[in-house]
Image (cartoon, rainbow, N blue to C red):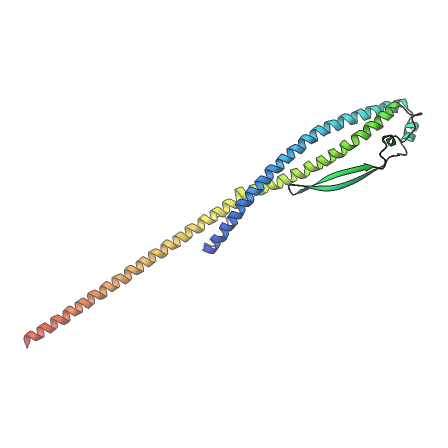
Length: 237
């Protein structure tokens, strides 16, 4: 018996064969999608690794400069220097479709294109290390934004890969074998019914043939008796 309950009819057999063809095509498409997603995912992971190392180096350099600036400047002067920023940033987000996965894309632009606007203080009362720290943080900002985008993309791709892999396995190891087993079962039952019908027809034919032979024999016997009786009567007369 198959794992699923089916009626052994030709209509059910035709329906299952259609579902099987659709499932096989879907399985192939899902496998191609999974392979392409894996390729995209590996590219994103490599870029993520390289960009993360770059961001960590830039942040370490910025933190080192800021630590030196904190040592040579008083806390009050450092806080006052960074209290009112001059530059502002606008961040926009859009989506890109990667193999039916909507991944985010971050875009930002500054209010002013002047590079000197990143320093919200005068240079007379601050140290050069603070300038280096602010400059390093400004430079690493785009890389940090790109890193956030890539990490979110890798997370979404990994989730989609897992979903696709589970669907592929469900089709390959559960659905398709069940339908193949059901088709084989229905085919065997139909063949068995056809053989049984053929045997019944042959038996009926044999019975009809035997009955016809018996009737023919009876007719022949009756005819012989009739002709024999007539001959005897003629002899007596």
